[in-house]
Length: 111
Image (tube, rainbow, N blue to C red):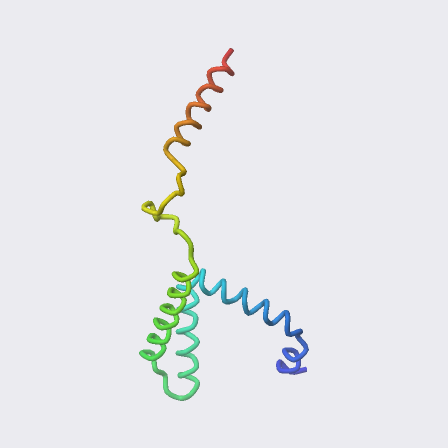
């Protein structure tokens, strides 16, 4: 049984779902994926008879750029984006309310 017959027996729906999952993971982990892609490009040019590390590095940078563009288009508010609007939610007031509630319960538990 060859690899082509194994792949031919896989249902199309599974291949599509697996491809979408791989694309989502590629966008999330774009740094390691770009390094792996560049390494595969280097391996491919090396096996073709003439290793071209500059072309492999350029392909890795291009792959990272495309994945970063996709992440920026479909990405939401980042973790470190403190200037993003909070839609009227006051984080400082909520933190103060939780702190006072904690201290009130702490005082009540002593008696």
